[in-house]
Length: 474
Image (cartoon, rainbow, N blue to C red; front, side, top):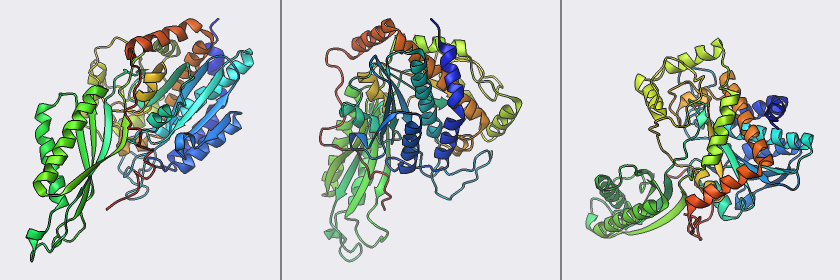
């Protein structure tokens, strides 16, 4: 029996409240592990909708889990609500207009992401109750996706051990099943300690930690020629030893993000970067300590779930935008370059069009050239059959992690896409709750992909959630 329309009606019943939640979270942007108000708002909405709520899971104060229903399979929906630093922007304005200079902003659309996932979970919960069917619906409110790896810590704590499937989504330019590709990633601080001295009177007595950081960066940059072409290494200075040039800097710290296509490749690259740091310390007669901040695994695909979700998205259709939606999207596109727009079409392997908002489903077998980043959804996908959707919440070509995404985070078009993807996720959840053969096929696919060893956390056992990683340092 096809009950998807009934599930979609449940989404429509609750959409106004969840759109309001999305806008509320947009208005209180909070970065990695500081999402107190956003997590509280999600917890309050879960309680209002009748979920049993557990907060501060896995030792993370801003992680929330809500569960409803009894017996049957466990269908998980993954939500996020963290923002990005320095991206404050007025809503609905197609020009760079910060609300607060240097303030935060939802430059990756996670205000929409968490709210749509919670909307799908609520709709499925009510649909199961209406149908008198067993099943548990679980919403995971996951903070700190932007580099904090909260889901990796939640997986390590066993919070997904009994889930049968996990469903999530991400804002995008397009309506599609998300390609299951991401880079494994380790974030690590390299802390150098030298010896201070008077830089003019006694420079020979000093040992510069800042020199060590700079030499390390030079060494890593030379390494780029000799690492896999799909690997990535980035860095940011966290401490530079002060502001006095007449003092030899005794302390310096640099944070590295080290990415590779899979976990073995990432571990090899991390070891090479560490050797370069040790070489820099040797050259400058300083000491270096490597401190792992966070780590995530690469995504594991799941063909049965991807095909099932694609079918749902095909039946449902892309969001229905009106001329006002398209007009503002064109204004946003006016702030972009033709290269920005061409780049996103290249990722889906389709020719460029002049449509300001995507109104089509990307074929599952499109000849893609995906732009690959990292996500802690990867760790969930190693232990639970997982699938993700993309929905067109922004004008085609909008680069993410920019003010343009923030400007579009409360638009009617973004709300329409958020509701449409909630319908897709809820419908897939309904099928997973009632179709044991789909669940078993998804589990068999996961087992075949992960092999006999299965999941091994990329997090060293001693590393705990970096709750203070967003604290400003010199």
